Image (cartoon, rainbow, N blue to C red):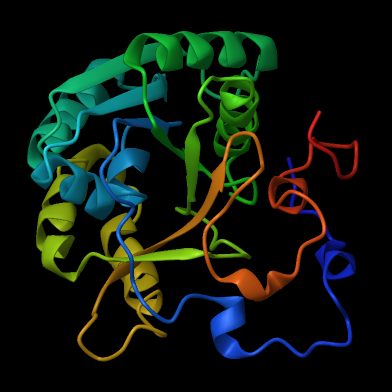
Length: 260
């Protein structure tokens, strides 16, 4: 799954886009929803949409976290850390699918995710975006979208970032008030923080994402928000796309653009 290189062809080349047409200049929460979070690994749910999860929980939304793969080196310890982190986020409903890391069975992923969607009944699904570095993230992104297609009514999809910034952002969520609690959740993953300082690095990404939001916003999470049927997506409106936004954010590996 890769970012399509030809996005420029989908807009009017005679129009020089202004700043607010490229990225939001105001923050906007994702609203009240029944939520499913697809996390390729235990820690992605906290590193990626952790601040937004806290907002959902505070607003009384039902939130289910789905951990797709197991840590082959220390599975039980990682699960324990995940449950501690989920408690910090205020989430009680955590499901471990137990799939093997780096073993990408697209049909199995799609089947598992579709079963989750049908049982949990979400209106909003968080999932990693297609330009992430880890192949597990890319696989979850592609299979999550495939599983969401055809759901009635259509689902809102919020593509989040962890290891690589989103190339296109149409929603910024102010998480300044939630940042300490998000840091506490990430801090539960001691096995991962022993390998890399993911905590400070995700703080840096969230700090950068406040760039267009004014001095009162210190931290923000960035998303590409779209509907699973590709018929609607959030601001900014100035991209002037002639086709579904999903056609340039997501394209199946090795097959160019398309949504099949």
